[in-house]
Image 1 (cartoon, rainbow, N blue to C red):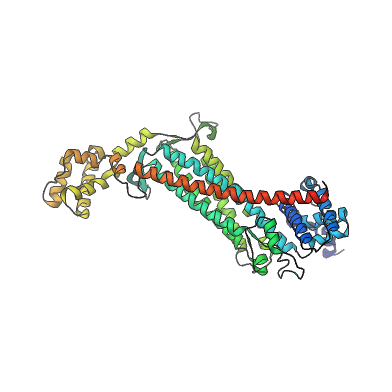
Image 2: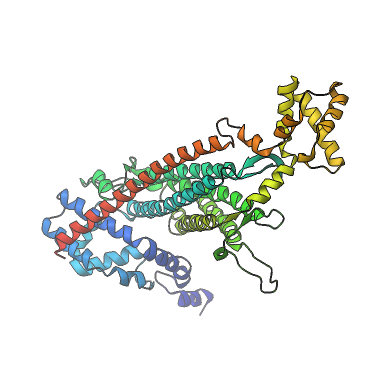
Length: 502
């Protein structure tokens, strides 16, 4: 027996080859029975209703097929193993329908293909996962808004280039996080809208000669639009790319925030204390209180961004048409990234909701920081009519001399300012002690920065109220799309039950 004969004996002479089944078909079947069975059955129900309404099958035939659909044991399918008897889950389901209803069940595939059906299934799975993820994102946003509201007056140092920059508030920082998350939510809702379009009726790629209704299928399956061009319906993969891009950016955005939170949990920063349910201890060091919940989030967000990036990579340089690259092998990466973001949003909401902030440390650190001295320069412009650049030079000298003398910002004296002013402008400044102390007060710094988007409590409260209103509109949108899907599924189920007499 030659090498080729031995390989055929080991692999099998007919479809599917042993290794092909192990590497490709069995993993795809296992994912399909978990993720694709429910939308597949919804499409079967919708297609049957549409065929009956268009008189492409008789009322009696519709009832027999409905009875076969109702008789399917979906739980048995979900727990079944791949045997190689059928190429995939679609053919296994079709075989069981034929066993139940006879040859007439074959007409359920009239004017449709696995191509348009598969794309519709993928879109239905993605829209469901997007909806769940968006619900968790909105849940996190609620907690972030509550956190910001609690810390409107919590003064802290803001950083640029990892160095102390200017006083701000914890609420100002957190509202920036809220706005970043809101943009992610907006991108994800746009991805949902473009995903929620129906491919049904495109068939293999050219539609069908049968007078079906693509519009009715769109309605029955709660899609918002029809993918007009039938080639685009089976060949366009940008709905996947848009979802992956939005998820990847959401993961990257949130990862940057989690990194800050982790840094602030260090004893050196001593800003945050993660609640007991979300820390772990050391097996050897009794003092350890490790905020590993945040560490896991950071790692998982990187994994999420990677899975989303895999989706984009697998689409890249593929033919513009029906191709397996965008199907069974790739879809799980999109699902995993969506599921992971959903979990992380929920976990971060729990961690943020139970986290303690060391307000006293933040306040004292800010009072002693030179982050306030921008306002000292601004004050010199107001009191002495100096150009800002000249005032900047004076304050730079003040900071340099204060540091050389081991002074903190709140220890700067009027004499120190005047000594530098004499060197730079040849005279003392008209600033008095009260104005100097006010200029170096971080609370004053924050309070007077009440331009739109600034950290003043008044401005932060305005932003919080506005974001709350925007939050309500996002929640209402999500309730509407969830309700539309639920009503469509209920109609399908009730119609098939009525026709089958169950």
